Length: 261
Image 1 (cartoon, rainbow, N blue to C red):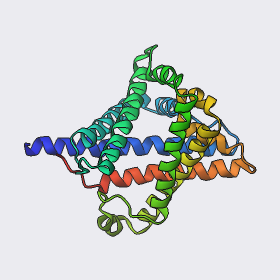
Image 2 (image 1 turned 90 degrees about the horizontal axis):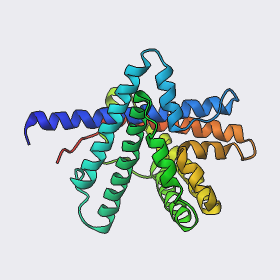
Image 3 (image 1 turned 90 degrees about the vertical axis):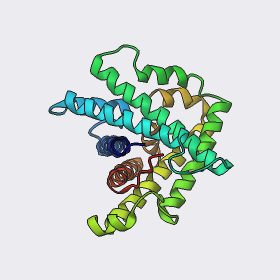
Image 4 (image 1 turned 180 degrees about the vertical axis):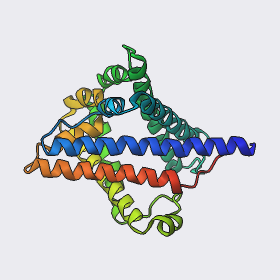
């Protein structure tokens, strides 16, 4: 592959990680506002609308849409092209399957942003609503169990496990400081906790799958925190964790090793 092509793919991937980080930062910001009672916890669509309302909103949303599309494309490269060398063993295939699902999710989010910009009626949010109608009963329980397992793994990884092998921790500590890695761990563990809550809710309330899928799983789980005793405190903690995860993605944008196949 030519050097210019490889550099272009690397730039695409780094821009995609930055776009994902911005989405999580804004999700956390809207959740924090909800925790103090100034608004409702936002869905990903609410995040996109928040960007659109900002100064130069259309330009910013266009840039974010492109970044999300590029992130989805990079996930497909990781899955189909096996950019990270996961191989064809069961563990590697599972990781590549996660990349594929992630790519589909962010492709839908990029389509959502384009729909808002172009005033489409049949946007990605409606596509999610249609697909979410099937996420009930046994399918919702299965999805909940997968989310529970993934959330527990992310909790362990954030607290005790190794960070991504693609992340150049040495360069991050040298240039930005040790706190960057601590913040990244908090973000990974915090998002894991959010996934655990969402997975538990789907397993115990399988009929709620369609409504949660039609908005945003992460935002839906933030609203679930509000039902706990001292729910505002739990929601604020979850919102801060999502913001930390957004920062973690920005760290990846700068310090991740991009393996172009």
